[in-house]
Image (cartoon, rainbow, N blue to C red; front, side, top):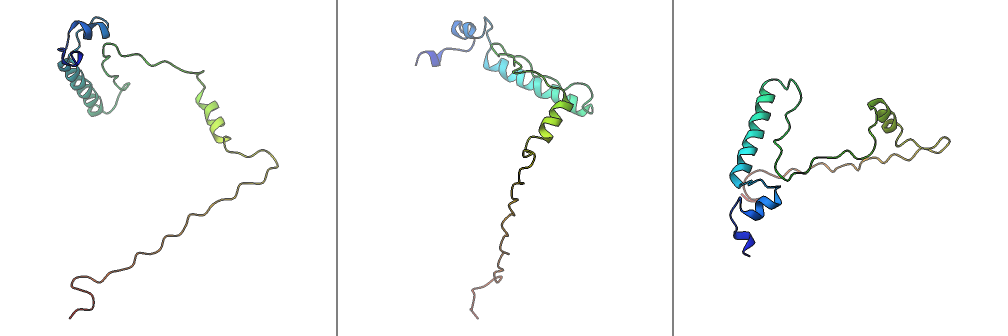
Length: 114
């Protein structure tokens, strides 16, 4: 319970964030910075690369998993992804179920009333 009540920027917080006293105010300022930078980029017509968010202390950078593939090669893979083997019968196509038309209700008043 005591740990939850520690102030921002305390020794525990600095130890967890690589020696940086990153407080709630810093986090909010970084969020404002990210939004302003993105808005300015958007109002500028989106020219240039999209701005990256400000790096927060303790945040891990993204790692590439696997081997990069050229766009044309990936398109070819995706185009043939669901193709059945040669000579196989095509899979049956399911037709969507028809919806019943909505029934109209009488407007206003009680039905059958005078």
